[in-house]
Length: 117
Image 1 (cartoon, rainbow, N blue to C red):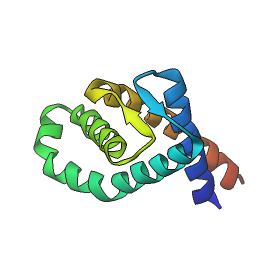
Image 2 (spheres, helix red, strand yellow; image 1 turned 90 degrees about the horizontal axis):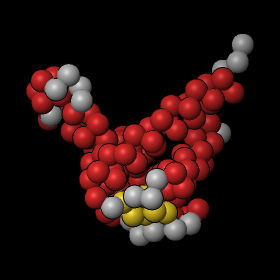
Image 3 (cartoon, helix red, strand yellow; image 1 turned 90 degrees about the vertical axis):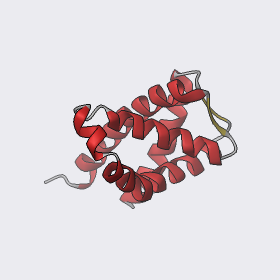
């Protein structure tokens, strides 16, 4: 139940990003649901590999290179999907930052909802 709710809220977060920032466009709720799923899969599969491969650069930049990795994954998801568009790397960077902020809020809300004592 928690996973489905997180997926739905992540799709709503993508719609929120598209509403707040014109560099990111989503055509429909269905496109947002698919995009949230693909971004989640990219973060699950590709992100750990990229983190290991770019560890020296990440250490030298004191972790700031992680923003670049997040932006690349966000941009890559838009590249493989129809109905989800990102206008360049700068838009991907800002869009991924906004999406990450929404993700933190979603995680906090779900933790409080499902793990109240």
